[in-house]
Image (cartoon, rainbow, N blue to C red; front, side, top):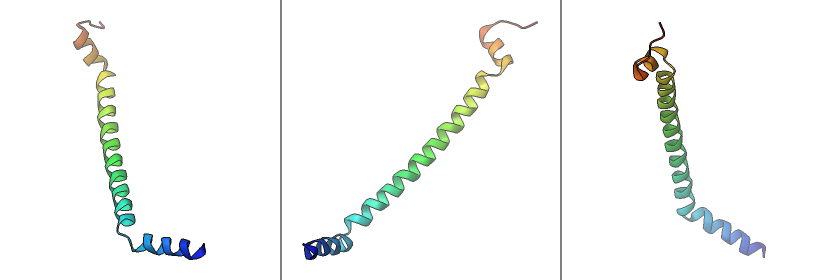
Length: 65
């Protein structure tokens, strides 16, 4: 039983599939992080644009005089 477990571990360590899966997971994590940062920056800029009172008055056609 122990020999089978050791043999499976040795096969896994010799296999190229394990490191490749880890590399893909790291790349996916980096892509998600970059996308999240970009979307967050765009959301912050959009929020500040819509929160601008002078822009809101221009868009709605009302004045706050």
